[in-house]
Image (cartoon, one colour):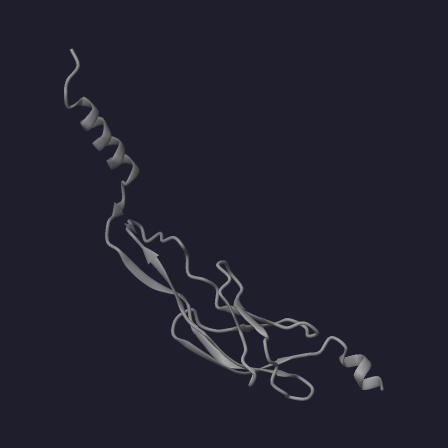
Length: 136
């Protein structure tokens, strides 16, 4: 004779085994900092319009500079639905590397803190054909 609660007990046991060490406490933490600055040509110091500014690690949140070369990359946060005993968290905080690129220029990286704000100042991109321009 089958017991009426055996499936329910089995489901509870499987759920408990799968979530062992997991406390359901939703929380967030910093994944990347807010980064602001201006992208300029390394030789002329002229602002570079439409330079791509993005987080190096996935997901690659990207923005483009305005006509003055300015950018404001908003911070991102991790969303956790539970806390794992032992302190293990996923997703892990991002590295604080921001990649700046534009067609005709060498790509450069800006590093900073994962949390808070980072004023990058003037980010100088070197033109790919700078050697040819200096020889003329």
